[in-house]
Length: 229
Image 1: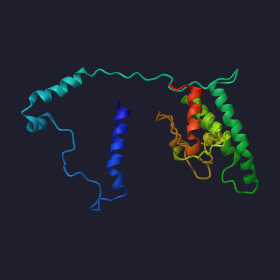
Image 2 (image 1 turned 90 degrees about the vertical axis):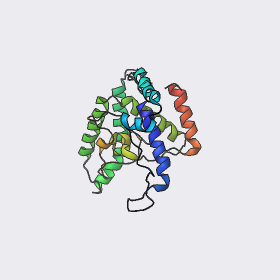
Image 3 (image 1 turned 30 degrees about the horizontal axis):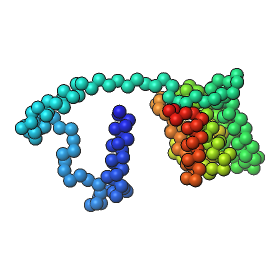
């Protein structure tokens, strides 16, 4: 409920703020409300406003007391990724990430030989291992494999896919798995802005698909992982 309400508030804020985006307080046309009444009032303040309807004020409290909703956390919110035989989700995720990095490494080696690589290959290896371990620790390998799977499907189907944007561009694992096409090290992009074990939240991978093929990607995901998931 809180998340849904937050989305609604955000949408309302965007709707209101749209024409005022980029304004400063010095601009007379900056966004502002015409009344200072937009705040949660005390019972006494509400009685002064609606003193002729005391039962209405009591009813809000009665309704609040009847609300006993308890949302259970979902233990496994992800669809199941179909693993090859004799593989766990952790081992297969690591295999895909490391094999993908080996393909990326050919370019890095050429840059290194030309003296144009700003970070050593050892630094790349260390960061890749660190990111893999954090992703495994936070139990997100399945999520990465699913994203890797439908991006691979899109590219193999000739559907243009964006190079990646947002905090996901700070992940070397995402780069190794072809989820993004941005090497984060030359730009000093931080993995911790994308995924941080001290702030447990879903990793946010922003992906752009060409409008001509986006429906095909959605259909692929729906048919493979189930509409209910």
